Amino acid sequence: MVLEILKEKTFRMAWTVQKGDKIGYLAGTAHFFPYSFKRSLKRLIEKTKIVLLEGPLDERSMENVRKYGLDEKESLLFLELLERETVEKMNRIFEKETPESLGSLMGYINRLTNNKELRLHPEIRGLKPWMTFFRTWSQYLRNRGWKFSVDMEAYEVAKSLGKEIHFIETIEEQIKALEGIPTERILNFLKKLDTWDTYTKRHVKYYLAGDYEGIRGLITEYPTRCESIIDRRDPVMFERIIPYMERGGAIAFVGTSHVFGIKKRLEDKGFTVNKYEG
Image (tube, rainbow, N blue to C red):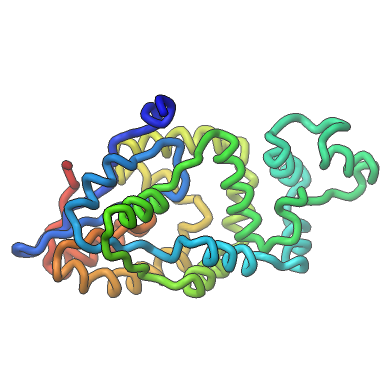
């Protein structure tokens, strides 16, 4: 209990959205984070009637995502594009990043093949490139205690408060967007695995401070900062959010990278969007 309290932080990545007497909120989420914001989110969500989230978060939907991410052929083709050193570092993440030894699964396999054949760890073998990336990235973060999710906490808080919950995208729409992430962006980010510690530390610093411009500058090379994920989705997400904002009493939780596009569109529609100071 004490540890959980120590992991609580104040949520600052939120904006007040207002037109006339209609007030709503926009929040930028972190899908993975080392700290919880549950109490802050509760205070914020209590001000609303409707909670909007990007997409379904139930276990059945998550299982569908995992199924969509399977493809042995694509996995093999992707492996051919990866540098050997990158693959070895990725594999070690699933061995809790300990050096390879005879006791580690991948170390054992490599020795059996005399290092002539390189294989992906069983946890990421047979996955499409985008799923390989997310599986590796999420495991890397879990190894560092990133066990919280703003999306999930908002969802759980909204349910506990009996709020009306709507998802602004379907799983199928989200999968289609993920399929469009350029392989080159994934490869480049994986190659820079040695810089991930610096990247994550800066992300935590900016997010906790509510420094949106800092976050925007940091994530320029992140794989999902691409046309398929941002440019094509922002207009659609905005069109699904705007009716609720016009009625007031709603809060929209979207990935932080979507805030800029949605905020700008809200302002173009005559809304005043200011940093939330709750």
